Image (cartoon, rainbow, N blue to C red):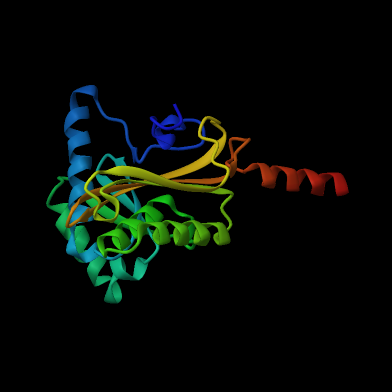
Length: 230
């Protein structure tokens, strides 16, 4: 289960939420879903967001408005000078839907702890023909210094231009994939090298979540210690 099931999909309803949030008539479900896919594809392919290091795109729908929340570690790239870039991007996406499209941006302070950004960074370095062993080691060390409790990175393909594809992985700390209360962040990217595609998967363990408010085990223990002290 741990290796073959997406850890985010496994935890939806436990400590993860959907990337698309809306309710529609069952007859309109397929059209709405395909419109979401079209909006995501157009957004990620837009030249305005290239190099913005986007982690996730969340879509929320109301009767006459679509809100797109972009999580990125470089919000200035998307916003542009006086908001010109994000306004142009919003106008382009508006052509794909009959509803008003609103774009919001959320800043990611610690890119070293975000699984999707880690995988994209590793893939980018693999395309630049860097040594995959050194790339994986550096990514793991940066994440560990940033405070993650565990990280695992797996790469598959013609590593180093080898004739036969294989898989290699590196792990630091603990990554309990079978524990539903564990806060596992997962990211996947593809490095399209000159000798073939290399897949990059990243699992990041950020602690265990015990209550519905989203606090992890350390926060719960700390609040308990304060209460006892009083």
